[in-house]
Image (cartoon, rainbow, N blue to C red; front, side):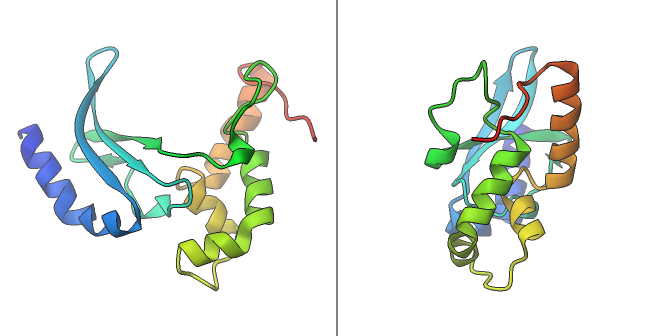
Length: 142
């Protein structure tokens, strides 16, 4: 199947999310000759509405603008995508998230999944494992 066909089908199935800020860039080639579907979305975007893979290709997402809580970090001492950072963000901005995602009844767990790669608990487990292995810095309360 051609890449053009894959992107056309992806746009058919997920193009409605462009109203929420999704940008579909097309096929990208990563190091190691791995092809992916390149997309971007705002930080506050419901990532549970997107698949991890589509027609055999992984999705790779960029975020246009990060909130201040995710900027200006010392990467030697702080992991930008620490699960605790997502928890703090959701706890401090729940009303804004509910408003942007147009879901006034959204629960904390749903907000965490929406913002955190579609599956917060999976990400949290990975972070805990990576901390133990020394792959990422341990979380330090501020």
